[in-house]
Length: 59
Image (cartoon, rainbow, N blue to C red; front, side):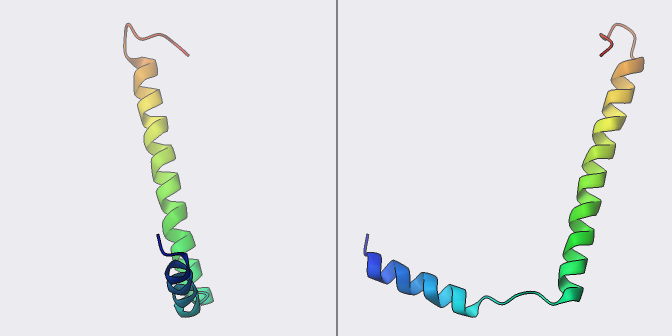
């Protein structure tokens, strides 16, 4: 493991990185939020179905 080479490659990547614009950040936040809501909704539907299935233990 060549430490100086690794550090220079990390510095190069950090120099290329930039902060996103507000529009880009907003779009990413909306997509991530929609994914979280979708997973939560799917979990709730599974919970609701398992609650009404005969023979399943109520929570």
